Length: 472
Image (cartoon, rainbow, N blue to C red; front, side, top):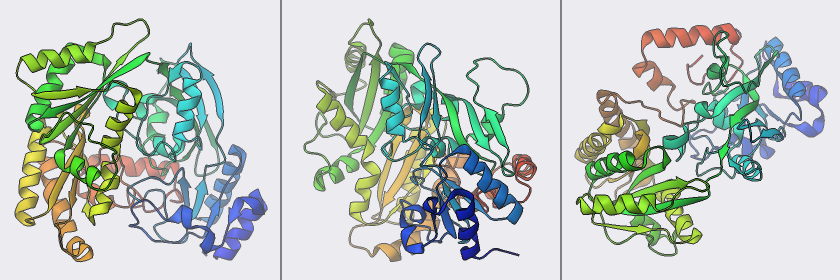
């Protein structure tokens, strides 16, 4: 028999105290409203445990009473994994678990609780002369637990890897309230299955991550940053390959942005001035790190070399911190500025790096055939094959009517091309509730069976993020 919302609030209050439970719908807005405003279900309650022991108590109670639980970090997810689906779940916010437990620069590790805001993790690492290199636009509000649960990527994947590769171990509460104590910082440990990798990227469907051992790295002494004019994604691929050959692992980021993105940001005042070297169909944002005592000028020398080879026609180097900040703002504001132009259809996809130009060319052609006047906005991580393939509505049309007609057809066209190129329909945003049916359509049946078996073994009553990812 399902519990009423009143009984759920009463039970949670007895477990963790009235100050840590929100039961009034009017106070839940910041927890149930997600960034894209696509999902609108209410929660039975929001719990804000202040300790790992309280998380355990909540899950023991939920498992016994078969109450759905949604773990939530900063509520920045873009596929609805962190907000209600059914309307009767309890959101467990990890916001109060926000301590940096330990930092060891010599070992290259930092132990952070799930509620630590990414920006605060950056500051803690930098205070020790190191960096935690997971870097993305929402770092001022995204929290470590959510970032790991969604296996977040960001702009430094090329040099440092995604969240999974930056995680050495996790502590997590399982569905029945048991605590998995896996905060290992060992670089070598061949004692069975890597359980950490089950929990990272599981979107809270297998357990609630409460803390993690994270990799930190020596802080670069400086960065070299440039915006390069490129004629096309094909030219961008050639430039990436040429720079990678010359610079190697010091190449931190290689992002591509179309001129449409620049036009929108200047039109809507997102940039105080044009950060580029002049008009170009496309731009590449490139960054190289210089370690302590290392030689400088590697990026400028490489750009001069490819300029001499005829690969590029123009470029501008950042000459100050303000220049660098403006260049990165240009890249990071791409999604936000689209909202100023009405509705948009968005995709987070990846293909082999060599196939990025094909993806963009074929995707634009296919969608423009379907909807003349639609405005393509493909941008993102050329260096790791992850493109945010977005489209803005045509000028002058009704946004809601356009979305009703175009959304499904555009998705189908882009995903068909992605799969034919050997890519993935979710590169770094996850599955959540947005892509549950899509995952069933595109994922190998054996892989789905294996994932389902793991889910049933660790969460037999299906209380953890019910209905998300696998739909169970």
